[in-house]
Length: 155
Image (cartoon, rainbow, N blue to C red):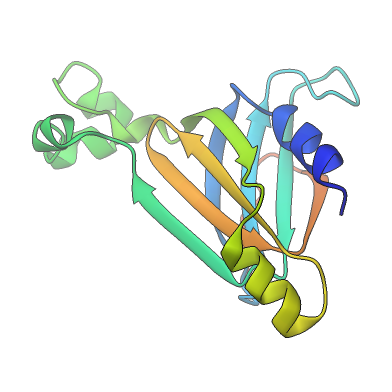
């Protein structure tokens, strides 16, 4: 996958809402579901699935600072209705602002995986106002998913 194309794909959803992220139910690929007010393809609101294929490393750390965490432990903050008027981070908004995504060039870890597996791997950093994700993967596919998409429901 061309690095410039990969970066452009990531840039297209910057400053939109991450509504879900995690490994898929089959545990190989990592997905980030982004709500965009205007889909670059259709010019309509959409939920886009960013599927990071062959994801060998996914790390998630908080980007909420400790003083804010201290004020955000109240369980009422996990529900928007009960937390909206409280001090602290309102987890109940159920989305995070995607502030920046970048391909980490010259990634030693991605290079090691490329040599070990025999296909290209890339490392990206995806920052939101709630979490910072670092992913090592081989390919990125983007598709639209329906409103209410539930990644862990199985038939």
